[in-house]
Length: 137
Ligand SMILES: Cc1cc2nc3c(=O)[nH]c(=O)nc-3n(C[C@H](O)[C@H](O)[C@H](O)COP(=O)(O)O)c2cc1C
Image (cartoon, rainbow, N blue to C red; front, side, top):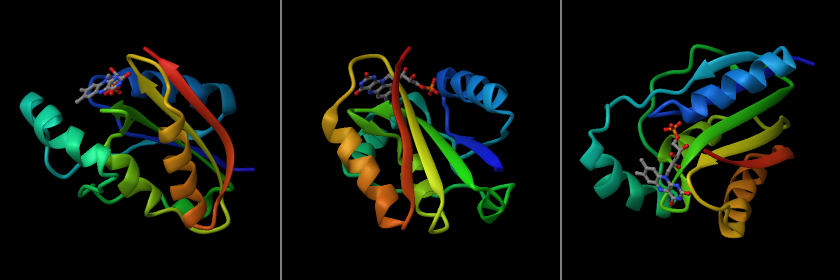
């Protein structure tokens, strides 16, 4: 079983958790980067509405081939109740048939709506959910 942890992080919380999960599972790890760096104002004024609308964003090409992995763990921060847009862009690249685990870092409490929306997005790619976690940072 080849495992990959793929994550997006702005201020380092998700990165730290991703590194921990990768170490624990002897998994490869790769960071998702947006093509355009966000200013702090952009995070709130543009990023939050994008997250709430489950919108995607332009990301740099991935440095790994997702087809090479049996299980993929995706991590992202929660913005305004939903994952940062880079999460949606990452899910869009999932090949069908993968086992997928999700984890999200956030300052507050988990929402069931976020869980339903993100699990559905993974299912829409023809992948199965293998785990789901909110991590309060
Ligand atoms: C634009 C923005 C919106 C956020 N919205 C929420 C939120 O709705 N609920 C919450 O619990 N935390 C929220 N947070 C806190 C982040 O989810 C939390 O700090 C996360 O761990 C950041 O991950 P990172 O360090 O990997 O970027 C928000 C942070 C930012 C920057």
